[in-house]
Image 1: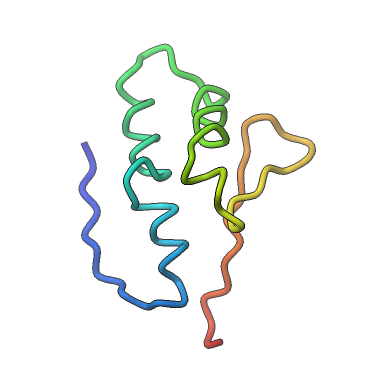
Image 2 (image 1 turned 135 degrees about the horizontal axis):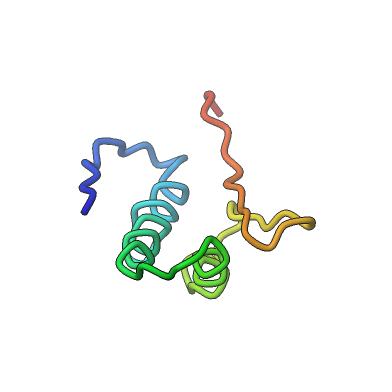
Length: 79
């Protein structure tokens, strides 16, 4: 089990942090999938795209040519 310390509080990145670290965000879904020995990359991708948090995010993108990949759009520089 992985523990991620929440040390970032920048408001312009909060939506990205919620997507990754929030309840039923990417890390929670990844942790859940790791508990199943027969889980596949496709299983994780399907859960990500079905998750309410992920569905509502403008930051999470599904590449057109992949059934298992995802991208997070984020610019870390000053706004």
